[in-house]
Length: 470
Image 1 (tube, rainbow, N blue to C red):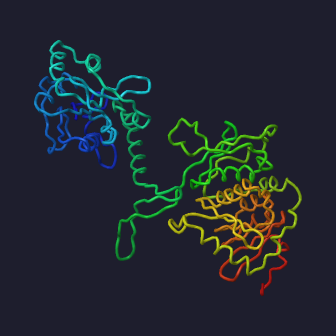
Image 2: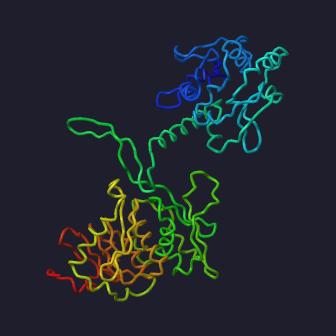
Image 3: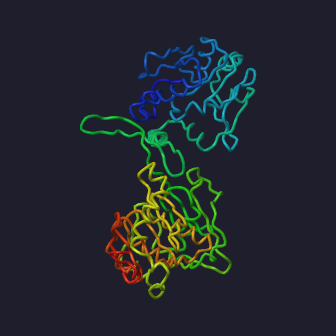
């Protein structure tokens, strides 16, 4: 590791600058080197580095990194050398391990997409030592100039590699590196097992003990929904069934009227940012269909915590016609309805694993379970099952009951109204605004489904067959 002395720009030795959680830049680089090298030595006189690291004094003090490389190759005989400066604290062993074996008397390095070569990290063939000495003997110190005359093998680096090769020369660059290192630590702490869950470390404490262990949590990532190339919404959701979610969202938000308004809905593969990969869905409208710009005003960041409110939203939901027409769902009995949450729970594998996912399901005439979907957001789960119905040719799904695993918010009722669903069944309570909209729109909410009991809110005339003996 190259670690010169005091940096004029930083006001102190860069090697000892903290990168996060008490770790210095030198600590980070040494960890990466130890992951790929049999032996690690320090070149330079930087302070703040542990005495357990062998240190070599420059044969040509003050002559720059090429003099340090000469010192290494003259004083430590080896089959090969890997040189990394201490001001690259974001490099890791995986990246260093990608450098190929250099050609005879040559080097191997990385190059950017532009074709520009990055001089460090650098693998050097031992037989190149005399070329370093002759270069320095003529008063030349520039590393890039020496590289230009050497046989070189280079490999391209991606965006993540570019991030790791950032040199820290100014205070602003140090702050950026600290943020990047913190983000990478958080990413390493979260291990995604599948689309719906991840494993994270947790400290479990009670009155008798404190234990560190792994725990399962619900996965949550942003999904951007586009119509054409126009971003419509960013939805915080549990990955999976994204096409159904986007379809249901566009229909229940009334951005399109019917499934046939959508020519196709598919994952977007044209993203340029790594964080967007797998997190963008693009819908293409059918010929002749246009978006109503006024309808875009309500959105569009949608959090997984659910919920919107306000008189203007009720007016927007009710502006689409009279209360819903009767449906076969009206003839469900209490005994049939109170079984639905339990039957849906049998299909909530993500909730069993994490305890953090909502679910929605559609039950058809006769009590047939049609579909169950899970998501970190209850409204997302509803969009997924309604999107499934639309893509399965069941739109509008009039003769169904919509079951949800939590409370019933205004937004859940709003989505049901858009899909012509007249009965909602839930294990928890409705909100006041949900009851208001359900009453006006002709929707029955069967809430507090616990055991054999339930409460009916909203348009109770929807369930005339419901009785204490039902």
